[in-house]
Image 1 (cartoon, rainbow, N blue to C red):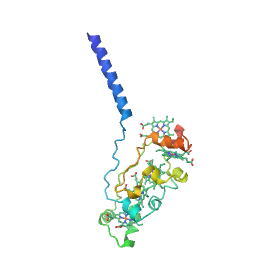
Image 2 (cartoon, helix red, strand yellow):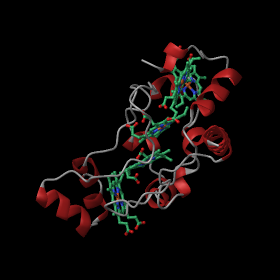
Image 3 (cartoon, rainbow, N blue to C red):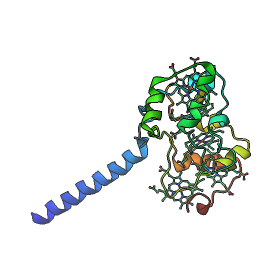
Image 4 (cartoon, rainbow, N blue to C red):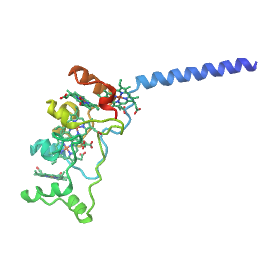
Length: 168
Ligand code: HEC
Ligand code: HEC
Ligand code: HEC
Ligand code: HEC
Ligand code: HEC
């Protein structure tokens, strides 16, 4: 009697494990918010779209360093006065002397190395990985950022797929 219960228990446990693995495989396990609420309603559609400001004007490190960088508040403040604009939400941060706590939309785990400049220099445009940002309001993540996404493109471009290329 006891033995048969034990076997039944093991069968149920094994089935649960298989079902769990199958679900992991089927579900897109991409649970992070793709379009987080930002502390300030910054519009790429307005700045990069309507006003046509170049991506690299604000994300100036993308072409020469691993990180693209988010512009500091002082940088934002240089332009608005030229158009006679006074943006209250922005000035509130300036007065508090606090950086705007933007919520990151694209992040990788710490063990992954992603160099922006290698990709920009290889001629891959921002939109390939970030979508049509100039039409976005608010900014929405365009890809799942899984390892398979990196590997697929590396295979297509004959770029390195050695583990040590990306894992440091
Ligand atoms: C090169 C010029 C330029 C820079 C740099 C710039 N802006 Fe602007 N911004 C504008 C212009 C022009 C408008 C008004 C656009 C319009 O109404 O057509 C604007 C409008 C805004 C608005 C108001 C939008 C609305 O809905 O009325 C906010 C908020 C804003 N900017 C935030 C920022 C932040 C944050 C930064 C820094 C990351 C920044 N801007 C950098 C030119 C700039
Ligand atoms: C006027 C300055 C400005 C311009 C021009 C601009 N951006 Fe941004 N970008 C920002 C600011 C500020 C943030 C942070 C707020 C947000 O996520 O919306 C940001 C965030 C981003 C992010 C998300 C970063 C993260 O992980 O949270 C991406 C991707 C991005 N920008 C790509 C682009 C691309 C591509 C273009 C050109 C089509 C562009 N940006 C033009 C100011 C700018
Ligand atoms: C090959 C794909 C790819 C291309 C091309 C690319 N990015 Fe990214 N971008 C990423 C990934 C992946 C991340 C997340 C990196 C991380 O967390 O280490 C990211 C993060 C960002 C961020 C967040 C902040 C930071 O400092 O990294 C910004 C801003 C950004 N990209 C802007 C741009 C702009 C502007 C361009 C075009 C000049 C561009 N990216 C081209 C894949 C790409
Ligand atoms: C759309 C295509 C594309 C995607 C997506 C992409 N890459 Fe790349 N990556 C390239 C190309 C092309 C190169 C080769 C650049 C060269 O050798 O000049 C490269 C080069 C690199 C390098 C430098 C390799 C070296 O030999 O030094 C690293 C590191 C890297 N990618 C990491 C990543 C990571 C991590 C991701 C995913 C988060 C990713 N890449 C996604 C196309 C891509
Ligand atoms: C082109 C870049 C790239 C290459 C090459 C690469 N990886 Fe990854 N790997 C990633 C990225 C990006 C992630 C993070 C994916 C995520 O968080 O979903 C990752 C995640 C992982 C994880 C999961 C860790 C975790 O966070 O749960 C393992 C294990 C792993 N990689 C092993 C390998 C091995 C082994 C190789 C060599 C055969 C390899 N990777 C080659 C980009 C790469």
